[in-house]
Amino acid sequence: MSFPKGFFFRQGFRPSLGISHFAGGFHLSSSTNFRFRLLPKMVSHNNYTTGFFKITLRRSPIGLPRKHRAVVKALGLSKLSQTVYHSHTPIIVGMILKVKELLEVKNVKRVPTPEERKHHTEPGYVVTKRFNKPVQDINI
Amino acid sequence: MFGAFRATIIAYGGLLWKMPAEMNKTRKANVRKRLKAVDKVIAVVAESGVKCKALTLALQLPKESEMKPRDKYTVFSKKHKGYRKDWIWILLRWAKTQYTLFLINRVQIH
Image 1 (cartoon, rainbow over the protein chains, first blue to last red):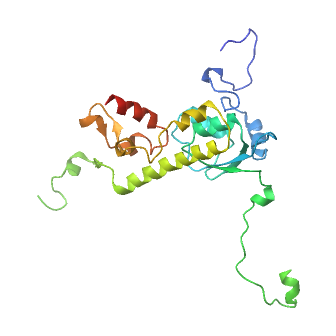
Image 2: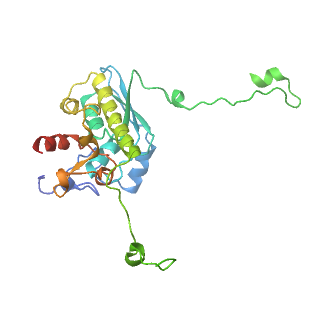
């Protein structure tokens, strides 16, 4: 890598690693890191594709080479069983296949809304009677 | 001879780890399970219709059903008899990374 004289790197940037900016080859300072976490789950939008990959991290990247871990991070996965959605593009395909041993992938037509992604469970009981209240009002 | 102070390998050496020379049924089944999971990922990605170099390379990999037991459960070793050893779960970090292409090349040589 060669840069013109007087070129200043951003704080914590390490060009010698040879990893791309996107794949985590730089250190975020504490304040930027905090903002980074507040961002919503990453979705690559592309209207020209047929659908999306639903990608779930099933095995940990611990102990794998640095580049593999960087790919997992770049996909937007930080925890086991975490799910992200990415569009059908060659870049994403390459990233999935790089760490294919760790992922579970499905093809979906659209990205579900945050409300649809919530886990709903039935309470498992029906309220039949409550003090001073008619039953019709309770179950509605 | 007997009792708490008997002369055993553990008493003399301290720590003793015994590693079985071959994989048992469960470990073999788990290896197959992981290989099948990888096959599934490649199949799903191929289904999406995207074409790229990484995918063409991945499609050239043998499937779990096409692999020989020798490739699934053993690793190349120049020291061992038959140039193969069974400690695959220790060496490959529980088969987390791809090893099949390397295996195929070795099979052709030996």
